Image (cartoon, rainbow, N blue to C red; front, side, top):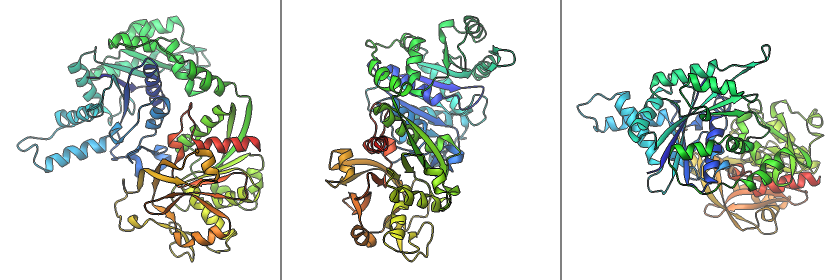
Length: 532
Protein backbone atom coordinates (compact mmCIF):
# COMPACT_ATOMS: atom_id res chain seq x y z
CA UNK A 1 0.00 0.00 0.00
CA UNK A 2 1.35 3.47 -0.82
CA UNK A 3 1.80 6.22 1.76
CA UNK A 4 -0.42 9.30 1.51
CA UNK A 5 0.37 13.00 1.80
CA UNK A 6 -2.69 15.28 2.04
CA UNK A 7 -2.07 18.94 1.23
CA UNK A 8 -4.50 21.58 2.45
CA UNK A 9 -4.44 25.38 2.40
CA UNK A 10 -5.53 28.15 4.71
CA UNK A 11 -5.85 31.92 5.26
CA UNK A 12 -6.26 32.84 1.57
CA UNK A 13 -6.50 31.13 -1.80
CA UNK A 14 -3.77 31.15 -4.47
CA UNK A 15 -0.98 30.26 -2.03
CA UNK A 16 0.44 27.74 -4.48
CA UNK A 17 -0.73 24.40 -3.08
CA UNK A 18 -0.39 22.88 -6.56
CA UNK A 19 3.20 24.07 -6.94
CA UNK A 20 3.94 22.84 -3.41
CA UNK A 21 2.48 19.41 -4.20
CA UNK A 22 4.44 19.21 -7.47
CA UNK A 23 7.66 20.32 -5.73
CA UNK A 24 7.24 17.70 -3.01
CA UNK A 25 6.70 15.16 -5.79
CA UNK A 26 9.94 16.29 -7.44
CA UNK A 27 11.84 15.94 -4.17
CA UNK A 28 10.56 12.44 -3.50
CA UNK A 29 11.18 11.31 -7.09
CA UNK A 30 14.77 12.53 -6.81
CA UNK A 31 15.11 10.02 -3.95
CA UNK A 32 13.99 7.16 -6.20
CA UNK A 33 10.38 6.95 -5.01
CA UNK A 34 7.49 6.29 -7.39
CA UNK A 35 4.42 8.43 -6.96
CA UNK A 36 1.30 9.98 -8.39
CA UNK A 37 -0.69 13.09 -7.51
CA UNK A 38 -4.40 13.84 -7.15
CA UNK A 39 -6.29 17.14 -7.18
CA UNK A 40 -9.62 17.30 -5.32
CA UNK A 41 -11.71 20.26 -6.50
CA UNK A 42 -14.71 21.29 -4.38
CA UNK A 43 -16.78 22.82 -7.21
CA UNK A 44 -19.97 21.07 -8.34
CA UNK A 45 -19.06 21.06 -12.05
CA UNK A 46 -18.16 17.54 -13.17
CA UNK A 47 -15.02 19.01 -14.74
CA UNK A 48 -13.79 22.50 -15.74
CA UNK A 49 -14.40 21.90 -19.46
CA UNK A 50 -17.42 24.19 -19.70
CA UNK A 51 -16.02 26.99 -17.50
CA UNK A 52 -14.87 30.35 -18.76
CA UNK A 53 -11.06 30.68 -18.37
CA UNK A 54 -11.65 33.83 -16.32
CA UNK A 55 -13.59 31.66 -13.84
CA UNK A 56 -11.16 28.78 -13.58
CA UNK A 57 -7.99 29.38 -15.57
CA UNK A 58 -6.83 27.01 -18.26
CA UNK A 59 -8.29 23.55 -18.76
CA UNK A 60 -5.48 21.01 -18.71
CA UNK A 61 -6.00 17.98 -20.98
CA UNK A 62 -4.60 14.59 -20.04
CA UNK A 63 -3.43 11.79 -22.34
CA UNK A 64 -6.72 9.93 -21.91
CA UNK A 65 -8.78 13.00 -22.81
CA UNK A 66 -9.89 14.28 -19.41
CA UNK A 67 -10.48 18.02 -19.00
CA UNK A 68 -8.91 18.80 -15.64
CA UNK A 69 -7.63 21.43 -13.26
CA UNK A 70 -4.47 23.32 -14.27
CA UNK A 71 -2.62 21.98 -11.21
CA UNK A 72 -2.33 18.64 -13.03
CA UNK A 73 -0.11 20.54 -15.46
CA UNK A 74 2.18 21.47 -12.57
CA UNK A 75 2.29 17.82 -11.51
CA UNK A 76 3.35 16.66 -14.97
CA UNK A 77 5.89 19.46 -15.46
CA UNK A 78 7.69 18.78 -12.16
CA UNK A 79 7.46 14.99 -12.02
CA UNK A 80 7.40 11.91 -14.23
CA UNK A 81 3.87 11.00 -13.12
CA UNK A 82 1.43 10.74 -16.03
CA UNK A 83 -1.93 12.25 -15.16
CA UNK A 84 -5.17 10.58 -16.13
CA UNK A 85 -8.90 11.12 -15.60
CA UNK A 86 -8.84 9.64 -12.11
CA UNK A 87 -6.19 12.14 -10.97
CA UNK A 88 -8.76 14.96 -10.80
CA UNK A 89 -11.72 14.49 -8.46
CA UNK A 90 -14.53 17.05 -8.21
CA UNK A 91 -17.56 17.39 -5.97
CA UNK A 92 -19.66 17.08 -9.13
CA UNK A 93 -18.13 13.69 -9.94
CA UNK A 94 -18.62 12.45 -6.37
CA UNK A 95 -22.29 13.41 -6.12
CA UNK A 96 -22.98 12.24 -9.67
CA UNK A 97 -21.58 8.81 -8.81
CA UNK A 98 -23.43 8.50 -5.48
CA UNK A 99 -26.76 9.65 -6.95
CA UNK A 100 -26.35 7.21 -9.87
CA UNK A 101 -25.81 4.37 -7.38
CA UNK A 102 -28.87 5.46 -5.42
CA UNK A 103 -31.00 5.44 -8.59
CA UNK A 104 -29.79 1.92 -9.37
CA UNK A 105 -30.92 0.76 -5.96
CA UNK A 106 -27.52 0.18 -4.36
CA UNK A 107 -28.61 1.92 -1.13
CA UNK A 108 -32.13 0.42 -0.90
CA UNK A 109 -33.55 0.84 2.55
CA UNK A 110 -30.99 3.43 3.60
CA UNK A 111 -30.83 7.21 3.73
CA UNK A 112 -28.05 8.57 1.52
CA UNK A 113 -25.98 11.11 3.48
CA UNK A 114 -22.78 13.13 3.27
CA UNK A 115 -21.35 10.84 5.96
CA UNK A 116 -20.74 8.03 5.17
CA UNK A 117 -21.77 7.88 1.50
CA UNK A 118 -20.10 11.00 0.09
CA UNK A 119 -16.98 10.67 2.23
CA UNK A 120 -16.69 6.95 1.40
CA UNK A 121 -16.88 7.77 -2.31
CA UNK A 122 -14.11 10.36 -1.92
CA UNK A 123 -11.86 7.87 -0.11
CA UNK A 124 -12.61 5.23 -2.73
CA UNK A 125 -11.66 7.61 -5.56
CA UNK A 126 -8.41 8.55 -3.82
CA UNK A 127 -7.45 4.89 -3.41
CA UNK A 128 -8.43 4.09 -6.99
CA UNK A 129 -5.50 6.04 -8.48
CA UNK A 130 -2.99 3.57 -7.07
CA UNK A 131 -4.85 0.37 -7.95
CA UNK A 132 -2.79 -1.92 -10.17
CA UNK A 133 0.30 0.29 -9.81
CA UNK A 134 3.47 -0.07 -7.78
CA UNK A 135 3.58 3.30 -6.02
CA UNK A 136 5.38 4.47 -2.91
CA UNK A 137 3.49 7.73 -2.37
CA UNK A 138 0.19 9.34 -3.39
CA UNK A 139 0.10 13.13 -2.94
CA UNK A 140 -3.45 14.50 -2.64
CA UNK A 141 -4.12 18.24 -2.92
CA UNK A 142 -7.43 19.51 -1.51
CA UNK A 143 -8.63 22.57 -3.41
CA UNK A 144 -10.08 25.63 -1.74
CA UNK A 145 -9.31 27.10 1.67
CA UNK A 146 -9.95 25.62 5.11
CA UNK A 147 -13.20 27.17 6.31
CA UNK A 148 -14.93 26.96 2.93
CA UNK A 149 -18.26 25.10 3.10
CA UNK A 150 -17.55 23.42 -0.26
CA UNK A 151 -14.39 21.63 0.88
CA UNK A 152 -15.77 20.22 4.15
CA UNK A 153 -16.68 16.74 2.77
CA UNK A 154 -13.13 16.36 1.41
CA UNK A 155 -11.59 17.42 4.73
CA UNK A 156 -13.83 15.02 6.64
CA UNK A 157 -12.84 12.24 4.24
CA UNK A 158 -9.12 12.80 4.79
CA UNK A 159 -9.67 13.03 8.56
CA UNK A 160 -11.20 9.57 8.43
CA UNK A 161 -8.46 8.39 6.07
CA UNK A 162 -5.62 9.50 8.36
CA UNK A 163 -7.24 7.94 11.45
CA UNK A 164 -7.82 4.60 9.72
CA UNK A 165 -4.43 4.31 8.01
CA UNK A 166 -2.40 5.73 10.90
CA UNK A 167 -0.01 8.69 10.92
CA UNK A 168 2.89 6.50 9.78
CA UNK A 169 0.94 5.93 6.54
CA UNK A 170 -0.85 9.25 5.99
CA UNK A 171 0.11 12.81 6.93
CA UNK A 172 -1.24 16.32 6.42
CA UNK A 173 0.85 19.22 5.11
CA UNK A 174 -0.91 22.56 5.54
CA UNK A 175 0.04 25.53 3.34
CA UNK A 176 -0.57 28.84 5.07
CA UNK A 177 0.34 32.52 4.94
CA UNK A 178 2.62 34.54 7.20
CA UNK A 179 2.04 38.09 5.94
CA UNK A 180 4.58 40.89 6.22
CA UNK A 181 3.13 44.18 7.50
CA UNK A 182 5.27 46.91 6.00
CA UNK A 183 4.18 49.73 8.30
CA UNK A 184 5.10 47.66 11.38
CA UNK A 185 8.08 45.98 9.69
CA UNK A 186 6.88 42.64 11.08
CA UNK A 187 5.73 39.24 9.91
CA UNK A 188 2.48 38.16 11.57
CA UNK A 189 1.85 34.58 12.68
CA UNK A 190 -1.76 35.05 13.85
CA UNK A 191 -3.41 34.15 10.47
CA UNK A 192 -1.50 30.85 10.49
CA UNK A 193 -2.57 30.14 14.08
CA UNK A 194 -6.23 30.76 13.17
CA UNK A 195 -5.99 28.61 10.05
CA UNK A 196 -4.48 25.68 11.93
CA UNK A 197 -7.06 26.16 14.68
CA UNK A 198 -9.85 25.88 12.11
CA UNK A 199 -8.27 22.72 10.72
CA UNK A 200 -7.99 21.20 14.19
CA UNK A 201 -11.67 21.98 14.85
CA UNK A 202 -12.44 19.74 11.87
CA UNK A 203 -10.29 17.06 13.49
CA UNK A 204 -7.09 17.31 11.48
CA UNK A 205 -3.79 18.07 13.19
CA UNK A 206 -1.25 19.16 10.55
CA UNK A 207 2.06 17.32 10.64
CA UNK A 208 3.98 19.94 8.64
CA UNK A 209 3.33 23.62 7.92
CA UNK A 210 4.49 25.29 4.72
CA UNK A 211 4.52 29.01 5.56
CA UNK A 212 4.30 31.29 2.54
CA UNK A 213 5.99 34.61 3.17
CA UNK A 214 7.71 37.49 1.41
CA UNK A 215 10.61 37.44 3.84
CA UNK A 216 12.52 34.71 5.68
CA UNK A 217 10.96 33.64 8.97
CA UNK A 218 12.95 34.42 12.09
CA UNK A 219 13.68 31.69 14.61
CA UNK A 220 11.35 33.47 17.01
CA UNK A 221 8.49 33.34 14.48
CA UNK A 222 9.07 29.64 13.83
CA UNK A 223 9.11 28.90 17.54
CA UNK A 224 5.87 30.82 18.06
CA UNK A 225 4.10 29.06 15.18
CA UNK A 226 5.30 25.66 16.40
CA UNK A 227 4.14 26.38 19.98
CA UNK A 228 0.64 27.56 19.07
CA UNK A 229 0.10 24.98 16.31
CA UNK A 230 1.23 21.95 18.34
CA UNK A 231 4.24 21.13 16.15
CA UNK A 232 7.97 20.64 16.46
CA UNK A 233 9.93 23.63 15.17
CA UNK A 234 11.55 21.56 12.39
CA UNK A 235 8.05 20.93 10.98
CA UNK A 236 7.55 24.67 10.36
CA UNK A 237 8.92 25.11 6.84
CA UNK A 238 9.34 28.54 5.30
CA UNK A 239 8.22 28.89 1.69
CA UNK A 240 9.44 32.35 0.74
CA UNK A 241 8.87 33.92 -2.66
CA UNK A 242 11.40 32.91 -5.31
CA UNK A 243 12.36 34.16 -8.80
CA UNK A 244 11.17 31.00 -10.55
CA UNK A 245 8.77 28.30 -9.35
CA UNK A 246 11.28 25.68 -10.46
CA UNK A 247 13.50 26.78 -7.56
CA UNK A 248 10.93 25.67 -4.97
CA UNK A 249 12.07 22.01 -4.78
CA UNK A 250 15.56 23.29 -3.95
CA UNK A 251 14.12 25.66 -1.34
CA UNK A 252 12.21 22.80 0.30
CA UNK A 253 15.32 20.62 0.14
CA UNK A 254 17.35 23.23 2.03
CA UNK A 255 14.59 23.35 4.67
CA UNK A 256 14.81 19.57 5.10
CA UNK A 257 11.24 18.92 3.98
CA UNK A 258 11.99 15.70 2.09
CA UNK A 259 13.92 14.23 5.03
CA UNK A 260 11.03 15.12 7.35
CA UNK A 261 8.50 13.36 5.09
CA UNK A 262 10.74 10.30 4.70
CA UNK A 263 11.07 9.99 8.49
CA UNK A 264 7.39 10.55 9.23
CA UNK A 265 6.19 7.99 6.70
CA UNK A 266 9.04 5.51 7.32
CA UNK A 267 9.95 5.47 3.64
CA UNK A 268 13.08 3.84 2.26
CA UNK A 269 14.87 6.02 -0.28
CA UNK A 270 18.19 6.50 -2.00
CA UNK A 271 20.50 9.51 -1.81
CA UNK A 272 18.99 12.60 -3.38
CA UNK A 273 20.31 14.11 -6.61
CA UNK A 274 18.86 17.39 -7.90
CA UNK A 275 22.09 18.62 -9.51
CA UNK A 276 20.79 18.46 -13.10
CA UNK A 277 17.58 20.27 -12.12
CA UNK A 278 19.61 22.96 -10.34
CA UNK A 279 22.20 23.46 -13.09
CA UNK A 280 20.15 22.99 -16.25
CA UNK A 281 16.84 24.44 -15.14
CA UNK A 282 17.06 26.78 -12.15
CA UNK A 283 20.39 28.47 -12.86
CA UNK A 284 19.52 29.00 -16.52
CA UNK A 285 16.11 30.41 -15.57
CA UNK A 286 17.66 32.83 -13.05
CA UNK A 287 20.75 33.86 -15.01
CA UNK A 288 19.90 33.88 -18.74
CA UNK A 289 22.50 35.07 -21.23
CA UNK A 290 20.04 36.34 -23.84
CA UNK A 291 16.56 37.78 -24.09
CA UNK A 292 13.74 37.45 -26.59
CA UNK A 293 10.33 39.12 -26.66
CA UNK A 294 7.27 37.13 -27.72
CA UNK A 295 3.80 38.60 -28.25
CA UNK A 296 0.98 36.36 -27.06
CA UNK A 297 -2.13 37.60 -28.85
CA UNK A 298 -5.15 36.23 -26.99
CA UNK A 299 -8.52 37.06 -25.52
CA UNK A 300 -7.94 35.92 -21.91
CA UNK A 301 -4.68 37.76 -21.20
CA UNK A 302 -6.03 39.54 -18.09
CA UNK A 303 -5.75 36.29 -16.11
CA UNK A 304 -2.29 34.75 -15.72
CA UNK A 305 -3.69 31.23 -15.35
CA UNK A 306 -5.77 31.31 -18.55
CA UNK A 307 -2.74 30.39 -20.69
CA UNK A 308 -0.63 28.84 -17.92
CA UNK A 309 0.82 25.90 -19.86
CA UNK A 310 1.69 28.12 -22.83
CA UNK A 311 3.54 30.60 -20.64
CA UNK A 312 5.43 27.74 -19.01
CA UNK A 313 6.27 26.10 -22.37
CA UNK A 314 7.75 29.40 -23.56
CA UNK A 315 9.83 29.61 -20.37
CA UNK A 316 11.01 26.00 -20.86
CA UNK A 317 12.29 26.75 -24.36
CA UNK A 318 13.96 29.90 -23.09
CA UNK A 319 15.75 27.80 -20.45
CA UNK A 320 16.92 25.37 -23.12
CA UNK A 321 18.38 28.26 -25.14
CA UNK A 322 19.80 30.00 -22.05
CA UNK A 323 17.47 32.91 -22.71
CA UNK A 324 14.77 34.81 -20.86
CA UNK A 325 11.48 34.85 -22.76
CA UNK A 326 9.73 38.16 -22.15
CA UNK A 327 6.03 37.67 -22.86
CA UNK A 328 4.14 40.65 -24.22
CA UNK A 329 0.44 40.03 -23.58
CA UNK A 330 -1.66 41.57 -26.33
CA UNK A 331 -5.46 41.71 -26.08
CA UNK A 332 -6.73 40.57 -29.49
CA UNK A 333 -9.89 42.67 -29.04
CA UNK A 334 -7.76 45.83 -29.11
CA UNK A 335 -5.94 45.01 -32.34
CA UNK A 336 -6.92 46.67 -35.60
CA UNK A 337 -5.13 47.23 -38.95
CA UNK A 338 -4.36 50.77 -37.80
CA UNK A 339 -2.59 49.93 -34.52
CA UNK A 340 -0.87 46.62 -35.36
CA UNK A 341 2.55 48.17 -35.62
CA UNK A 342 2.31 49.78 -32.21
CA UNK A 343 1.55 46.45 -30.51
CA UNK A 344 3.91 44.19 -32.47
CA UNK A 345 6.86 46.23 -33.73
CA UNK A 346 9.24 45.32 -30.88
CA UNK A 347 8.65 41.56 -30.70
CA UNK A 348 10.74 38.76 -32.20
CA UNK A 349 7.90 36.23 -32.35
CA UNK A 350 4.11 36.05 -32.30
CA UNK A 351 2.02 33.29 -30.70
CA UNK A 352 -1.75 32.96 -31.10
CA UNK A 353 -3.26 30.46 -28.61
CA UNK A 354 -6.53 28.54 -28.49
CA UNK A 355 -9.95 29.67 -27.32
CA UNK A 356 -13.64 29.60 -28.14
CA UNK A 357 -16.15 32.10 -29.49
CA UNK A 358 -16.05 35.00 -31.94
CA UNK A 359 -14.78 37.67 -29.53
CA UNK A 360 -11.30 38.91 -30.50
CA UNK A 361 -11.05 36.73 -33.61
CA UNK A 362 -10.51 39.56 -36.10
CA UNK A 363 -7.66 40.91 -33.99
CA UNK A 364 -5.99 37.48 -34.04
CA UNK A 365 -6.36 37.34 -37.81
CA UNK A 366 -4.73 40.77 -38.16
CA UNK A 367 -1.82 39.72 -35.95
CA UNK A 368 -1.32 36.58 -38.07
CA UNK A 369 -1.37 38.62 -41.26
CA UNK A 370 1.31 40.86 -39.78
CA UNK A 371 3.46 37.84 -38.84
CA UNK A 372 3.07 36.37 -42.33
CA UNK A 373 3.81 39.58 -44.24
CA UNK A 374 6.62 40.82 -41.98
CA UNK A 375 8.29 37.36 -41.82
CA UNK A 376 8.07 37.27 -38.02
CA UNK A 377 8.36 33.78 -36.45
CA UNK A 378 4.84 32.56 -35.68
CA UNK A 379 3.33 29.72 -33.66
CA UNK A 380 -0.41 29.06 -33.73
CA UNK A 381 -2.14 26.66 -31.37
CA UNK A 382 -5.61 25.13 -31.91
CA UNK A 383 -7.79 28.18 -32.65
CA UNK A 384 -4.49 29.88 -33.54
CA UNK A 385 -4.11 27.41 -36.41
CA UNK A 386 -7.71 27.85 -37.50
CA UNK A 387 -7.39 31.65 -37.62
CA UNK A 388 -4.15 31.25 -39.57
CA UNK A 389 -6.07 29.23 -42.18
CA UNK A 390 -8.82 31.87 -42.28
CA UNK A 391 -6.24 34.65 -42.74
CA UNK A 392 -4.51 32.75 -45.57
CA UNK A 393 -7.82 31.99 -47.29
CA UNK A 394 -8.91 35.64 -47.19
CA UNK A 395 -5.68 37.43 -48.01
CA UNK A 396 -3.73 34.96 -50.16
CA UNK A 397 -6.44 32.83 -51.79
CA UNK A 398 -8.77 35.84 -52.25
CA UNK A 399 -11.72 34.05 -50.64
CA UNK A 400 -13.46 37.16 -49.36
CA UNK A 401 -15.51 36.45 -46.26
CA UNK A 402 -13.80 33.12 -45.54
CA UNK A 403 -14.41 32.08 -41.96
CA UNK A 404 -15.14 29.30 -39.51
CA UNK A 405 -18.72 28.12 -39.14
CA UNK A 406 -18.15 28.59 -35.41
CA UNK A 407 -18.17 32.36 -35.96
CA UNK A 408 -20.29 32.71 -39.11
CA UNK A 409 -22.68 29.90 -39.99
CA UNK A 410 -23.45 31.56 -43.35
CA UNK A 411 -19.89 32.26 -44.52
CA UNK A 412 -19.51 31.78 -48.29
CA UNK A 413 -16.20 29.97 -47.73
CA UNK A 414 -16.30 27.73 -44.61
CA UNK A 415 -12.57 26.93 -44.55
CA UNK A 416 -13.00 25.79 -40.93
CA UNK A 417 -16.02 23.64 -40.16
CA UNK A 418 -17.45 21.37 -37.48
CA UNK A 419 -15.95 17.91 -37.23
CA UNK A 420 -18.30 15.30 -38.70
CA UNK A 421 -18.61 13.42 -35.40
CA UNK A 422 -19.55 16.69 -33.63
CA UNK A 423 -22.60 17.51 -35.76
CA UNK A 424 -25.01 15.43 -33.68
CA UNK A 425 -23.49 16.30 -30.30
CA UNK A 426 -25.88 18.17 -28.00
CA UNK A 427 -24.22 17.72 -24.60
CA UNK A 428 -21.39 20.22 -24.08
CA UNK A 429 -19.35 18.67 -21.26
CA UNK A 430 -16.59 16.22 -22.22
CA UNK A 431 -17.75 15.82 -25.84
CA UNK A 432 -14.99 17.55 -27.81
CA UNK A 433 -12.21 15.75 -29.64
CA UNK A 434 -10.11 15.18 -26.56
CA UNK A 435 -6.85 13.49 -25.62
CA UNK A 436 -4.02 11.90 -27.57
CA UNK A 437 -4.21 11.28 -31.32
CA UNK A 438 -1.39 10.36 -33.72
CA UNK A 439 -0.09 12.83 -36.27
CA UNK A 440 2.03 11.93 -39.29
CA UNK A 441 4.65 14.60 -40.02
CA UNK A 442 5.70 15.25 -43.60
CA UNK A 443 9.44 15.05 -44.26
CA UNK A 444 11.14 18.21 -45.50
CA UNK A 445 8.94 20.48 -43.40
CA UNK A 446 9.86 22.74 -40.50
CA UNK A 447 7.65 20.59 -38.28
CA UNK A 448 9.77 17.56 -39.20
CA UNK A 449 12.96 19.54 -38.51
CA UNK A 450 11.58 20.25 -35.03
CA UNK A 451 10.37 16.74 -34.20
CA UNK A 452 12.92 14.65 -36.13
CA UNK A 453 10.30 11.92 -36.45
CA UNK A 454 7.47 11.03 -38.81
CA UNK A 455 4.85 10.10 -36.23
CA UNK A 456 4.01 11.95 -33.01
CA UNK A 457 1.30 11.73 -30.36
CA UNK A 458 -0.26 14.99 -29.22
CA UNK A 459 -3.20 16.12 -27.07
CA UNK A 460 -6.31 17.74 -28.54
CA UNK A 461 -9.27 19.80 -27.38
CA UNK A 462 -11.47 21.10 -30.19
CA UNK A 463 -14.70 20.70 -32.19
CA UNK A 464 -13.77 22.41 -35.47
CA UNK A 465 -11.32 21.37 -38.16
CA UNK A 466 -9.84 22.51 -41.49
CA UNK A 467 -12.35 21.91 -44.29
CA UNK A 468 -10.65 19.50 -46.72
CA UNK A 469 -12.65 20.94 -49.63
CA UNK A 470 -10.29 23.96 -49.63
CA UNK A 471 -6.99 22.15 -49.12
CA UNK A 472 -6.02 21.85 -52.79
CA UNK A 473 -6.53 25.57 -53.44
CA UNK A 474 -4.56 26.59 -50.35
CA UNK A 475 -1.73 24.19 -51.21
CA UNK A 476 -1.48 25.74 -54.67
CA UNK A 477 -1.09 29.15 -53.03
CA UNK A 478 1.74 28.01 -50.75
CA UNK A 479 0.17 26.63 -47.57
CA UNK A 480 1.86 23.40 -46.50
CA UNK A 481 -0.14 20.74 -44.68
CA UNK A 482 2.80 19.38 -42.70
CA UNK A 483 0.93 17.06 -40.34
CA UNK A 484 -2.16 14.89 -40.80
CA UNK A 485 -4.26 12.53 -38.69
CA UNK A 486 -4.14 9.51 -41.03
CA UNK A 487 -7.34 7.72 -40.00
CA UNK A 488 -9.64 10.59 -40.97
CA UNK A 489 -7.29 12.69 -43.12
CA UNK A 490 -7.59 15.65 -40.74
CA UNK A 491 -5.15 18.55 -40.84
CA UNK A 492 -2.99 18.70 -37.71
CA UNK A 493 -0.09 21.02 -38.69
CA UNK A 494 0.21 23.80 -41.25
CA UNK A 495 3.16 25.97 -42.24
CA UNK A 496 4.32 28.40 -44.94
CA UNK A 497 7.09 27.69 -47.45
CA UNK A 498 8.43 31.21 -47.96
CA UNK A 499 8.75 32.17 -44.32
CA UNK A 500 11.53 31.85 -41.69
CA UNK A 501 9.22 29.92 -39.33
CA UNK A 502 5.43 29.98 -39.59
CA UNK A 503 3.94 26.84 -38.00
CA UNK A 504 0.57 26.15 -36.42
CA UNK A 505 -0.94 23.02 -34.89
CA UNK A 506 -4.49 21.88 -34.23
CA UNK A 507 -3.26 20.09 -31.10
CA UNK A 508 -1.89 21.61 -27.89
CA UNK A 509 1.90 21.06 -27.72
CA UNK A 510 2.17 23.07 -24.49
CA UNK A 511 0.69 20.18 -22.49
CA UNK A 512 3.75 18.00 -23.13
CA UNK A 513 6.47 20.54 -22.36
CA UNK A 514 8.71 20.27 -19.29
CA UNK A 515 11.38 22.61 -17.89
CA UNK A 516 14.11 20.03 -18.56
CA UNK A 517 12.55 18.79 -21.81
CA UNK A 518 10.86 21.57 -23.84
CA UNK A 519 8.37 20.70 -26.56
CA UNK A 520 10.03 20.54 -30.02
CA UNK A 521 7.70 23.11 -31.62
CA UNK A 522 8.22 25.64 -28.83
CA UNK A 523 11.96 24.95 -28.90
CA UNK A 524 12.17 25.61 -32.67
CA UNK A 525 9.93 28.69 -32.38
CA UNK A 526 12.11 30.33 -29.72
CA UNK A 527 15.28 29.32 -31.59
CA UNK A 528 14.10 31.15 -34.71
CA UNK A 529 12.91 34.14 -32.69
CA UNK A 530 16.35 34.41 -31.06
CA UNK A 531 18.01 34.29 -34.48
CA UNK A 532 15.76 37.13 -35.59
